Image (cartoon, rainbow, N blue to C red; front, side, top):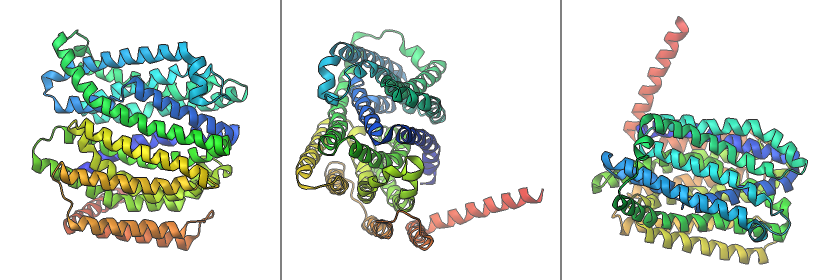
Length: 495
């Protein structure tokens, strides 16, 4: 488990930096443009994510899975063929945005938004596609060091752009939203492309392949990516749908509050998921032996059960200060939604671990069925809720319910299709973690100011749960590592 934690730490560090910069961008938007500006920023960001899903056929995961599951001599051909598919799809969608903006804009963004903004959305479309392909190359070839470095470059561009972009937006230049959303991803993609070319991966893939190879790889790509596309469109489309409902029912200001709550939840959860995924998907895709597969799934399940309670507790304790620091006091009402989402995040991360074998072993039909059904239920319940509830807080409650159901479905899949049953001890660890999260949530439910004794009580309970969750051998290893670090520190201090 400690080997996995080391990989998670390095990839997670780059992800943290990346996400923090985007949160800082949200704060600049909040301070300079207010809730309505944040609402527009969130709406366009979600649109950019939807466009990227369509433009790449949501195929970045398929690229990683395909590279990891193939022998060395077949990887270059597969990478070349996927690159040609990315280029073709991106060109078609870019042309559609440029030519169909007057018709698409009112249907995607509402009549209050200028149709010309869709022309500029080609920038994030190209940047995200470029980044998705070449980061997938680095991950598929297991070059995690370069992956970490490239991911850190984009946020630097975002930091340089966000303030002048906000000034342009205040002056009526809505095109600056697209620049902020697209240029950083383009820089990441160019850096990753440079590494790929220097390593020879993309150079080898630049030679035209036989048509039979392209047909074979295209079948594999579209077979799995069609499931990912439908699932991705269902997921990101649901976010856009719910955001649109919020705008129509409560206005752009409340849409900004919902976007802040959603962003906060995605920020720390994405850190964990992307960090785990950089190790989990390639390893699982290359594992065909049942014993190795079962061990890997159980290891990642236990890792989540151990890490999530203390991680969620830290976020619970800091949530009010985080909103003030990263956004503004105007965004504190977003905690009405966010406090419920924190409770559901345990089930969200677990369901991700249990659903990943569907992608690793290209079980597209199962993935489509579960994803689409879940999102349809979520969308239907959200639509009903907007007619029954007077505020957006119910969306956080719905988040908990949906991911509880989703985790139950994916756990059933793991048992029935993969033959992996969780030990009873995992159930007790889950229950203990939920109690820790629930207790911390109650302590800070309506707290907008820090209380030292509440902080100590919540963190102390979470730390105790973390220590109990480790096995005896792991606790011994931790003590030995700490002793080594203390000796090194003492020797360094005496010099």
